[in-house]
Length: 516
Image 1 (cartoon, rainbow, N blue to C red):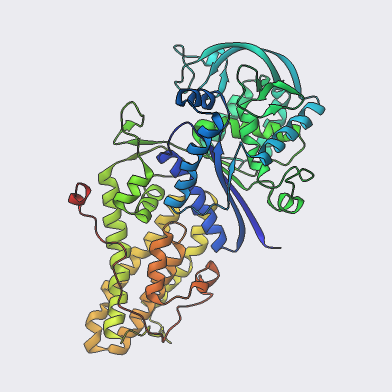
Image 2 (cartoon, rainbow, N blue to C red; image 1 turned 180 degrees about the vertical axis):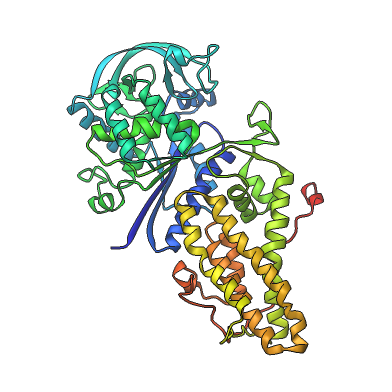
């Protein structure tokens, strides 16, 4: 049986167009999924849309259409984003799907049968924008901690006995120190739980757009119990249901990684584990909460008109350039600031100069000076040859550690450190001068460099799949020989075949092009 890896994005709420925050989360998951596939894992990468709740019902009323028509249109925008940004998700789930409704109702029945759900009356502060309830202690200047306006709500509601899971959650956190990352976020979660948990309202009776509560159509399920269940729905749970699949459920669950924004960490690290504990279902292995982006130092908001469209960004600067910048510029997990100058600097320095110039001039020298034939590696490599090849061969293990910790920026830094060493190797060996003085040595140097470029391109595939494919095509690397099982000295670049004239993969970006 092959190794499995199940990764999820949050399901995105269908009340607006996709923005850079949605793209950032999904891109991180895409990098993880692509890396794991190349590393020999059987991957399931899930994304989708959260389509129930009061906000959707109100937005549909304003638009003069049914909630289902509204969600059909907006959900398609998120599905389109996966194609536009070259995401490799294996599944796209919608909470309005029948498979999901059945899973939600099944988990409700289990919680009810086990005595963890009771009917009572809710009276308290509710933020429609957050689809969340808040205590009076959390309300600041009449608003929720997120800044969302709140309203006083009094209505019948079913409650989940969250208070019974305080000690169980804390014990689980203690036994699983990597459950939430970064560590600072985990500390926030523990502090919240230690402060005392109150039973959670899990139904609403004041609107109808949601999954009906089993045997009580006057209520719909609270959006977070509905939304969070998507992660297990997609595995084929419940296995005895109309959409059940015992084989995929047992293979995939528990999830290896839930990737979320820091604003929804509490729901994933407190409520979701408690629901699963109550239902006697395994808990996910890890939840990672990343930070937010600002735009040129300003908070991003529609009112300021500075929302960043990820599709427009990729159309302006290039798709892989955008993917690289988002994963490289900011330590993943921290907040980051987007600026045009920072992006152009990364594109021109890291991509055009460091990697692009290295691959272009090496492959061009092979095309011009070796009759277009990939030369053979030296039989007796020099100390310089051995040093750079050893550094390159060690990269996979280094990058794997960073990726498994969601240290995407560190993974790229490790690769670029060796790219810098490779550029120094070019300058010290000066193959252009060896053409006249020692053509045999020139071929050896170019062969070493071609092998290094091959390894860089294979390792960087998860971040920049289209651009790295072009580099590997130019080297004549077969499509079946681009997995990580060909790295770390396990294989070398095939030699003796003819290559074509290379074309630049990462041209420099001229700032005037922004307005042209």
